Length: 114
Image 1 (cartoon, rainbow, N blue to C red):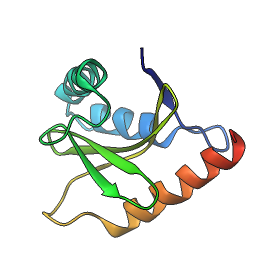
Image 2 (image 1 turned 30 degrees about the horizontal axis):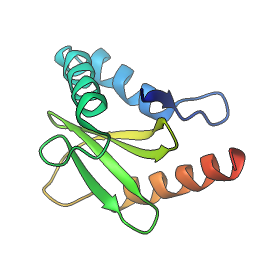
Image 3 (image 1 turned 180 degrees about the horizontal axis):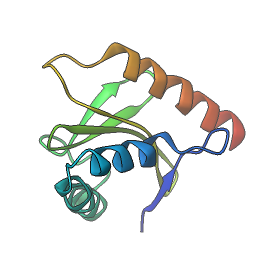
């Protein structure tokens, strides 16, 4: 069974913060969509493929969980799915800043849990 973990940094969890901000902004369906996406991915496999997941950084093995206009970057470490950071999709291109942030968070997670 896959354990879902929110990456924490300096007392904050960027992916959880994204979900909270989306909910507070009136996007109340985001939590249900997130839960359904997590349920599907953990049942089918953490690399389920489109439309639910997509690899965004092959070198660092970072995936994005896709639900509605929201995205959450994650990595797979053993039996854990580590949710790194989240953002709202604004264009067809991947937000390079968010991908770079996910890479930093993945590196930080891996160095702390090596």
